[in-house]
Length: 133
Image (cartoon, rainbow, N blue to C red; front, side, top):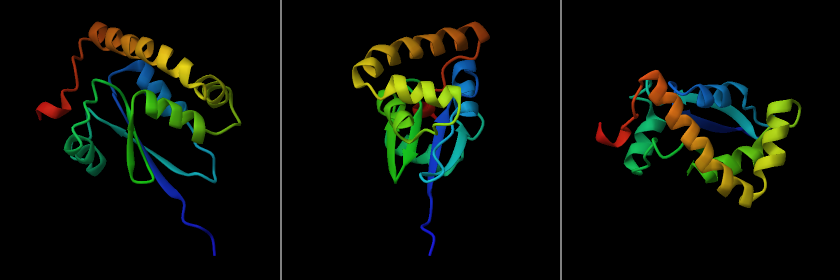
């Protein structure tokens, strides 16, 4: 009997071009599970987004990945992406090599988040404010 593959949920900011690129290009290894994406700005009633809100995770502080029933945010999510990411293409290969190193994740994630904040400010999108809803 074939094992049931895990559902993986990647919750991101759909107004952020960097986040959109990550959500589009990120792939998981076939043996790990099936990746689903959730745009936190347009899918407000999605059950995973409701779990995130119940857990009081602020999406303006970072993306969230739900894997094996656990919510991983920010640096932890980036490390998880490196762990479960596919090996076959440039984006995922680079992601795996760079972000398996926890020191590099701690250094780079705040810079990536600053890039997100600048991008959404330039677009005039504002914050997600998921916990205020």
